[in-house]
Length: 200
Length: 200
DNA sequence: GTCTATAGTCTGATAGAC
DNA sequence: GTCTATCAGACTATAGAC
Image (tube, rainbow over all chains, first blue to last red; front, side, top):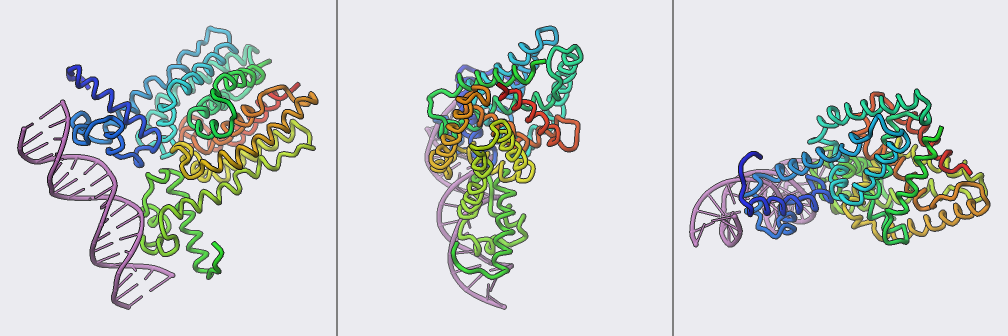
């Protein structure tokens, strides 16, 4: 939005978006209700709709916030750096995002599971283009014999899956793994797998 | 159920469960409606409820069917076999399930994302026990120097995430990857990663 | 800005004809 | 077994008092 806002407006919008993230990330767009979000935000339902004209607008606002930060770790992967360390750095940034922003990860997962109705264009556009660009970088590294000759696309998919799993399937990880914090072990295993995978 | 059923009953129950799987796997329990399921099944809503007394019963029936087959690939991992081939065989069976039963994978993913309200006991029970048992097997292989000394739990998580990704995030994979069938490439990459990861 | 009240629609489930 | 009609409650969104 481009309109100026008072402090109280900004605060309430933030509270609503955080509550919406809690609810939408768990139940998806269709499975979430304004009552749940209002309850989580500590506001009445009409008051929610004073700040966001519809349930849809809360959701799409969250999605567009998400997209703008979701690609940053991959964008930061630098052609000029050391190939193995660049890929590993990307994977670790992605894992950190699963630890620090699990709700955003689950929001994205829910949107994809439901067929990406509100994000499909971005997947076929910016995401596809960015991945194609980085796949080219990876192929360049491979042509110079810097890393093993694996398919760049599946390499990137494997980094996505290995890292997002700890956010999206947190409930399962917690149920199965007899430790408090899964992330130290996850990072060690991720580093082991990727270094071995990429070694020439 | 234990009651005898006519052929038409069996057929309609099957049709309803398949339609329910279509819908629930996409929108989760809360986001799915009986109208959607009835439409997908080609039956009227009251007729649906003639076969299953409630929406909840369709869903829980699907979940219990899922659980009984979901663990089979891991159960089949054999202590007495060759360690690398056993783990690789498990991973490949799991990947085949993502290819052949993507709806079941997404149903499970949705249930976990929503906090596993109807499957939590199984996660803390049979699943946790099975994984603990197989982790012990893997530790035995490691003690004998047969495979690399990686954390068995994170190894199993990595196999889950790498394989289920191609079912759960299919829409994203299709949007980004410029090929028709992602699975041949996925299997090759999976095998490469795991052989490298496990090598002593 | 925030609330109560409520309109209008959707949803899960039931009644009852055929 | 299958349908039309329908109820009761939940849902998104609006009206209007304060």
